[in-house]
Image (cartoon, rainbow, N blue to C red; front, side, top):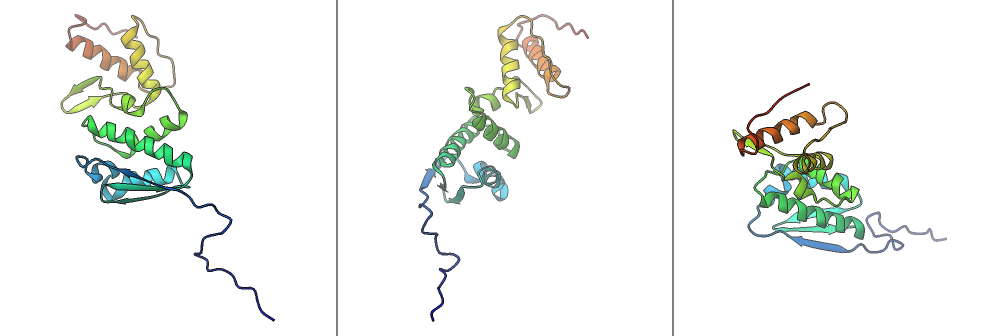
Length: 181
């Protein structure tokens, strides 16, 4: 009597459809370490956020294998990250995670627009919104005479309002700042 043979464990499951591979070519003027981070830190962040996707980087190419919706999401994410890099802003894990969150929320705002909107620069530090809500708050300050910021403590309402006030003072849009509580 013959025993049934099992296919090797690394053999593809015949029931599983082949997953398409797509390659994203990174422009030559962008260093891969700038995009992927030291020790591929940003790449690992992307892989954790999209566990069904297999990501390989070689040279200036990133290959993406997995479900089509994940492939498209990561392609868009890479485009947004490249745009952030093009503005001269250093890329970090926090920016990658925030970009992923904004893309998943499918908002009208693009992560590159939100994360690169500079409000004020001083002594090498730049103040900019970190979330979509902060960007909307800053836009409201730009378009309205009076803005009421309501929300939990520690979300940046006063910090961003003060940055906008100081920027207006520096740009001579106002003559003085009056602080009240």
